[in-house]
Image (cartoon, rainbow, N blue to C red; front, side):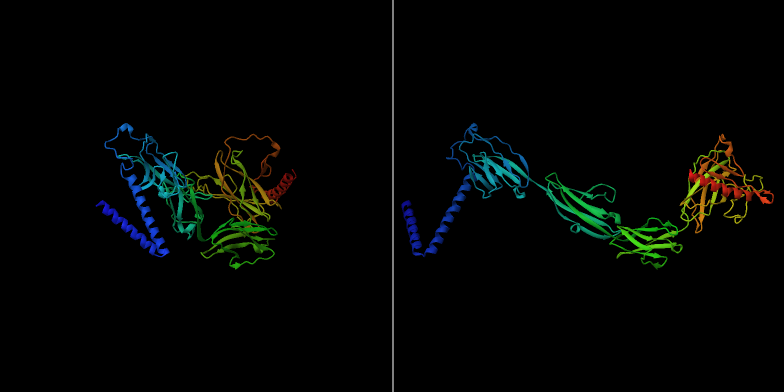
Length: 548
């Protein structure tokens, strides 16, 4: 029967050969290729079965179990490898007493190597130093479990786990990195990143702190609740997972808002023939056009009036100021979002007075107060106000019927001697302000100085004072309140020749005057003599100080 089967097979083979020879050349070549391919796949299938089937690789199947001491064992243990992408990893598989058994590397159901033969077509995989498996240029799909197996009757194996570490990568950010939004709107910044392990995301701001005042914040999202122009800038999203270098991407935040104007000085002093600078600081997004107005009249530039722009600083320069230039000005800024206006006054009135006395007086019942004021136009007169500081629970008291008159001359009409002699204000209510009008000493200096000796004060008491100055353009605003204290002990006079004369006294620090007497003398009041002495003395005194 076997002989008949062999004859039959031989006959079919001969017949097939005859068919091939009778076919044309192209058909015969194609048939032979198919035959070889079938043989190749059959060989591969048998090769795989050889190493997958337990015990198949033995040269002969043993009739009984071999001794345990004669079986191969592993000199390596399974490990977990954390490998960065594009790096190389070597998986160890040291075998003790390998004998005739075949060793194979597998990943899942895929056989990578069998014995010394590489089965996987992947060129990145190879055996090194015996049975160790090397994988070059690691990629994310190389992650998984790799098994080194010995084909004993009961296969022995160790398993290595490969985890692929992927550096941080930012996939996307809000609006592609550019945000334009209006003032007061909510801004939500998003940053999406990946990597293995999952990266942490940190927010910072270039050359500035975050709107909440912190230097950084964490999380995929950063929210600005109500945006202002100060929140504009570059926000940096940084993703990092301790693998490789951090990944960064910048989001440019642009806040659109109407012009915001800050006036450098709302009141500007100048004088005829001088130069005046009116300055407005304008911030706007987008850029604003700035115009200058005098009251309601829009100003054009000319040889005396020019404009200058340096960044956000807009300046109106008035050269050779004339009296007609004094008045109210405004700067108007306009962009597509809105319009704003701010006001500046150009004035010839003096600057506010600055009181520069020592707050601790040297005398028990009088105090030398001195002050200065800047004015391009000569000062004509000053008005001094002073009073004793009232106690917190003290209210004004009428002293007219109590015989408690203040230690000062009676009141004169405000217009009598105005600008030429001092006028003492008198109030019958305790703790009300007392006022004194003083003529100024003629001076062409920009800074004008004056001093006055207030008399009739209480010992060791606290007083407060304030001063106004006037030139031909008007009065200054009231100065800041200045507080001083009279001495509790009498001062020992060291220079008798400088004692008070005709109501005028002088100290080493400043000139002091008291022109309070009004009694008549030979047809002239003492006040008239005092006025003459007052003017002459002040002129000589300031001339002497100028020379010294």
